[in-house]
Image 1 (cartoon, rainbow, N blue to C red):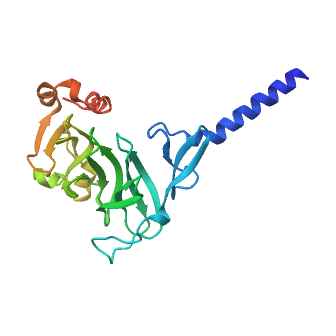
Image 2: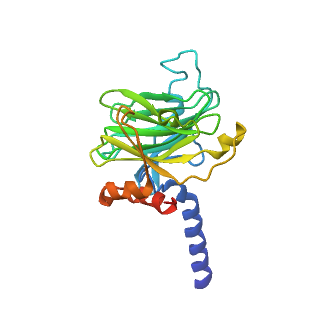
Image 3: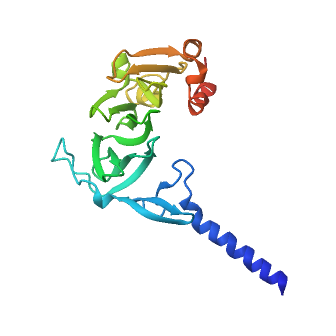
Length: 248
């Protein structure tokens, strides 16, 4: 009888963990996209209980800059809480158009950052001081580029391969300098895009790009040269993983 009770207790404990495990989001701590309903962002109140922080029904239905551009049915695809926990950067998967934005938690104000048109809005990355954020995007040709946004200035600019006179370059996996005045990122040749235009694929080592907040002063270095010039202690651990995968 006791053994049966123990088995039942273990079974129900395991079942509860399975049900509640989606509430634990390792990346964002206590804020997460509802795994059963991506139109809702939730915040953990106490262990195993949460409240709704933001719904897609609270979001605008069209672009502020281009009112004729509608978003359609919307679902959250990526979120990232700012380091001080006051703002939430998010990307929206719209049936008509993707877009990215900032949500100020205290005032419940939504700020539109980027309209993706025929592109896909991807993950955001905050600077250490929480004053700036950079979003990844991918266009209809599967080229990857970056949108840099300054919260205090309300300004935005784009970093893509065309700035480096390389329309076949992907700019991905960004991170910020310690002072937040420079953004670094991985640079790869997009061979899928080259093939679609009838060009042969290239075998080219990955590089590391650097730019300022205005998406200017663009510099591309080999991984080896970048590591020699930039102190390793200023490079986040998640960025160090990129170097181990990059041929020198």
